[in-house]
Length: 313
Ligand code: TA6
Figure 1 (tube, rainbow, N blue to C red):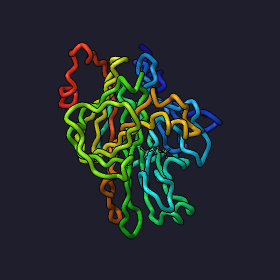
Figure 2 (figure 1 turned 90 degrees about the horizontal axis):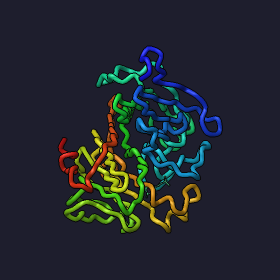
Figure 3 (figure 1 turned 60 degrees about the horizontal axis):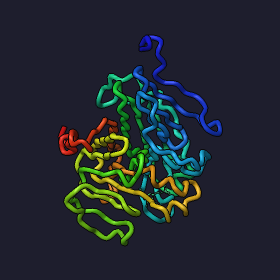
Figure 4 (figure 1 turned 30 degrees about the vertical axis):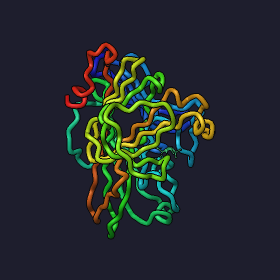
């Protein structure tokens, strides 16, 4: 165990293509990486150095292209059409390290965190005429949990609306061995059927083909069970009522140049989001949206882990 006094919890350095990144480390061995480009988490490793997020082998680390993997930030819109990029422009902009963040509502015992900030450029204001400050805190907890807290303030003189998602790509051993607990019986909008509204069946969600759905009014906890790895991801969220579930499957995978043809087998997007209803901010108002990810051993296959307990615990 390193001496905490000399331990480097936060390091800034150069990543792929010389892009600036921040590495967060915890003394037990877990780590996370965040690129200033996009304010995007690109890696989250447990204390055995295992990568928990999916990053495409064909991901493009160049400006104006979103990085295919990790946790892209979708703001000020999600999956909409019109003048903006479909998932908004926040993931295609260079963020700055926020050296003077306002006091954080919840104090953190962790020393491994970074505060980033994004403000619209003159060009951004031409395509989305609303002034804002978007503060993102990424924290790696002492136990290796990963927390993202977004605070978006309307610094304009008129109200604005937005939609939002943490577009999290989880790394999974084999998509056919993965189930999601916590979304049973909920309504969802199916992007594969003109966003028509359907109701989920009564048991866990499993995957045999492309899925692209927005689950509405979801619980604060969702569990993603990886049977082969005997690992459960627990996603906890606040201020984000919806959850997007996406796997492109084979046909869509082949159609994405920054995604390997077979990579759909090893990823699943479960995205804490506010998309069904827009969020409205009056001048001076601030919105907060938070997600916390943890990875727990789950011997679910031996019946020892009751997913409902994970969701209630
Ligand atoms: O999160 C689901 C989704 O909206 C899908 O429809 C799919 O397009 C995915 O996002 C990826 O979008 P991107 O713009 O990152 O290629």
